Length: 269
Image (tube, rainbow, N blue to C red; front, side):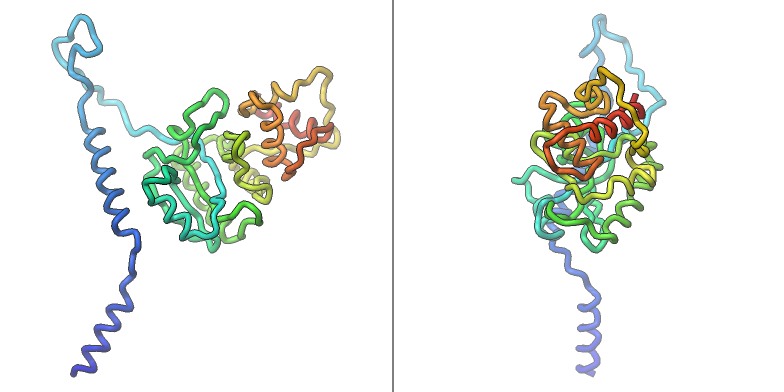
């Protein structure tokens, strides 16, 4: 009888999964409840924003949650998925993402899509200077110096399909961290398969440039700015463009680059 009980106990223990993030998950729920209370509050008391003071409050019936409109793709620049998960659950790091995708394709959804992750940092795309407030951040487990695993990209494509459909995100709004912060970031690295994503509808791409004729007076800096790049450092913007669209990490710029840029510029106009 004792032997049988021991077997049952061992079986139960074997079926249990230890979660090392139990404490931080509890903190997540606490913060989520706090924001839920803020969302449930009525607008400011009458008179705070108005002179004269209205005699009563009127709450509209026509509203919903704000939706993300961009997806920013990163590489973690760390050595493993567990290391990244730990980094994103330590308050002192002040960094996070909505999703982390491990080498084997495992997807960790770390933050509700409607909440603001701390993933973009100081960045800019077009006239948007607070990218965190309008975007979903996806981190791919990659140290920055290697190709991305096929299982990882498969999971990413499944995730992007859901995000694009669920939030009606335009194809042009799937971009990289290095695109929005060209002077300080280079992720995802030049191994990232942007064309494969664009072929599936996540990002724009250019056609064959063999017959492309760049018109006289074409301004590369203006074209980069129209696409969305922050051109205050035009060299950094050009390098970010080449890394994304040409898988090229050099700092040179020639007619081949001009043709690719001109081809894309026409799509973004």
